[in-house]
Length: 93
Image 1 (cartoon, rainbow, N blue to C red):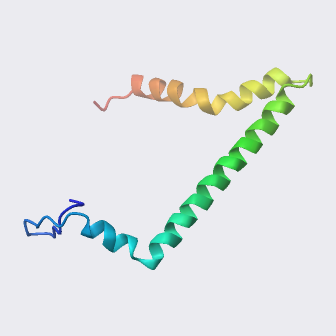
Image 2 (cartoon, helix red, strand yellow; image 1 turned 90 degrees about the horizontal axis):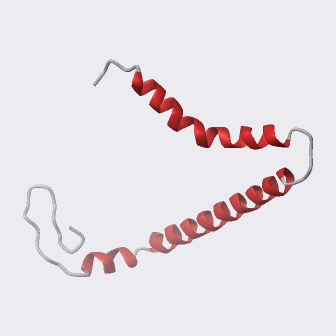
């Protein structure tokens, strides 16, 4: 569909790369791409810094370290067990 000018109710014609050239000519396109890049880079950077900080803190010899490690792993482990448990007693098939 990217290479055609298909509309609802019509078979469409092959137009090649005209659709891509049309989108690349939009002034909003470069803004949208830039916003996506900025959002992605900042989200990855924040997750990396926060994850590294938590890892460094939990690598220290602190009281309750194993509890906090288990608490942080709980959201990762619970969805599988809770979905399996809920699905086992479900009467809807």
